[in-house]
Length: 166
Image 1 (tube, rainbow, N blue to C red):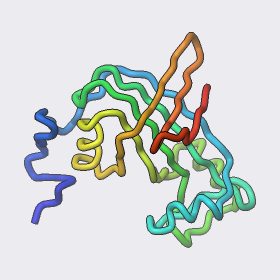
Image 2: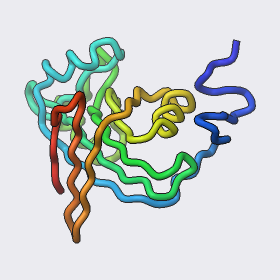
Image 3: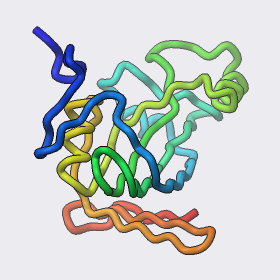
C-alpha cells in the first residue's frame, strides 16, 4: 500500500497542476527570528511528536519564526510562515548540558521540528501536505518588505497571532 507522501512515480496532480520531485523554488525572500521560550510550554505543543526542546539554558529553548515570500516556484507565488523549535529525541540527553546544544545549533547538527505552517494558497497547502507531509493551513499572512526590513503578520480566525519585523 504506497504512502500518499512518497508515491513510487513521485508525481502529483494537485489543484490542476502537475508537480514532480524535485520541486523547484527559484526565487523569493525570507526572514527569520529566533526567540527564547519556556521549555515546559513549548514541549506541550510538540508532546505527541517524539521530540522535546533542545535546551540552550535552564528551562529554555529556541522558537524559530520564519516568513517567506515565494515569487517563482513550481507551486506558484505565495507567502508562508512557519513556527519551529530546535529539538532532540524525547529522553535523549545532551553530551554537555546547554553548551553542546549551542555548538550543535551553530554547526547545523540540531534537528528542527516544524509544528505549524501557514500559507496563502490552496496549491501550496495541498502540495505541502501531500508531497512533504507538512501540517499546512491557509491563513491570512501580510508581508511587507522595504529596504533592509521585512515584516510578517499572521492572522488566524480574524485575530492577529503575531507580528514580527527584522
